[in-house]
Image (cartoon, rainbow, N blue to C red; front, side):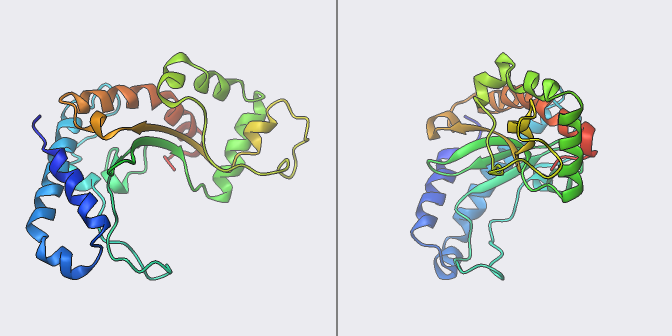
Length: 223
């Protein structure tokens, strides 16, 4: 295995019980190695990602998020995240195109995509698109065998009642009530540690691509 992700998982597990600046500073070199392992994995993914998306000149450093938490508006003042996350898309974290999220965390790794926090105008546009064909196109995507194999069903928050302007008996009311449209594929630690994990990640993203494209075509950007 070219990336020692076991080292990264071990570091994150220890961080869970030592989430303070003193410990982190004492283990800075270990953190640097844990992050370098992630960068190597993302570099491998980028090098073989062409069948999914053209990532241009995007680098692993463009994709990886910082481990420092933004605690300004949070009651939880622990300074560090307990995961390492990366947004794989053209431009990395700053992409305005389709993207695919990788979360590496002991016992809670996953691959995800879709609409997480849409602006009101994006929600309006998505609902209009669903209304225009009674949800047939989106339902075809999420009911496709490849999507169901990796993601099962749609995830995310929904409204309790029909959104304003739509009848409660609308044929696509379950889709119209959605506030989020998420696809998530959970990973065991053993999955992450497999030699062919980069290849597996790309296969999952290929299955997600029609889902991502659907929303990109509506809003002009990944959300």
